[in-house]
Image (cartoon, rainbow, N blue to C red):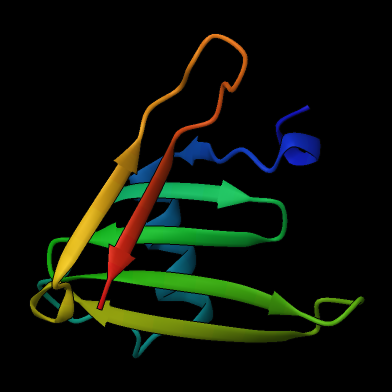
Length: 96
C-alpha cells in the first residue's frame, strides 16, 4: 500500500551501505557510513554521515540508474511536513 501512496519505507542502514559498496564501490568514502535509508518504489535515499545520496532508477526496465549526491554543506534549508489524520505521509524537502 505504501507504493501506491508513494510513501517511503525505512530500510536497514547497514544493508543499504553494503549494497552501495557492492554495486558502486567508489561511491562511499572509506570513513563514510549510511545512517538512515529509505526506499520509495524503485528509488532509494541514503543519508550518510557526510551527504544525502539519491538512487534514481530510470526507464521502464530500470536498467539505468542515476546517483545524485548532495553534501550537507550544500543544504541551505529544509522543510518537514508531519502526518495528519487523513494524510498519513511525512515529507522532507531539502533546499540546495
